[in-house]
Length: 370
Image (cartoon, rainbow, N blue to C red):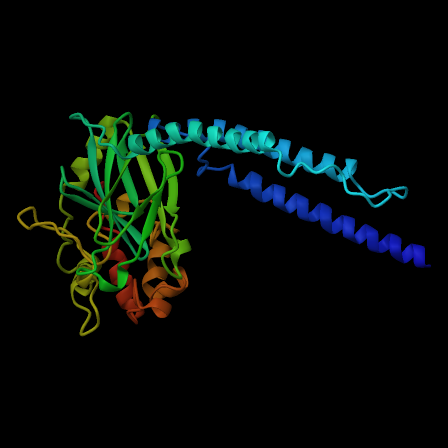
């Protein structure tokens, strides 16, 4: 009976060990797959770090195998035996030659790695120069990314559009304390397949270069903990052929159309600007309607061409009529731990069914292709 119990206990331990190994291996493999795989670069500014990661990983693997091999050898070779007389194995302490060797070798390895590492850091941050460089200002908010194209006077949020085969110069900071005091925290912008990660710091300006070789949608996120809704702060880069990007710029440079009077959409526009004593949408969000008016950043994302984006609310929800309605009705359930916990972000406006219908109808008109 005792042997049976011991056998069962041993079997359970082995099962738990195997399960743990499988789970750990699955997590490691998951980290190297999918559309946010830094080991699958899609542009030159992501290729540089990748080319550095590979040899460093090889060196680290060789060192790991060597050290672990020596440990295993020592455990087996110098294990206690029944016929041991209690004497200690030969000690190497004080062997100057050995100590110099195992000190110099790691120092040389680190020095060799340091040269391309420092060089790569400067390459990632230096202005690529040239007339074809696209400038984009990136501002980190809690919890969304704002993008401004100074050459075109275009504001957008969460989804950045860029032309392929064109270097993009990102000028980055976090929300200004004077503009949004409660939002002044550090963020980190990271699109793994296009570039390394870079911190966005209030009151400071950092830089990052990016380029996409092929059209596509590249996923990323904030990589620096910035509050309870940090996990809901995602970023997207839409790389387009240059001709398609020019079309996008033309569309984004066109003011939003004003709905005709007497329509449900017009009622929604009126509510957008005035909610009868409640905080109106226009107090945080801009909808640019007149070319004669200056465009300006708001405390919340620019909504002028909202429907040109595939996602909203920090790029966590698909841009659908149903999701927009749910967002207006109960934003905190759509993006947990934002306003009700932190007092930052989209508040619950306590909208009636009629107000929801009108506001959603108006938001659906904010489409540059309509």
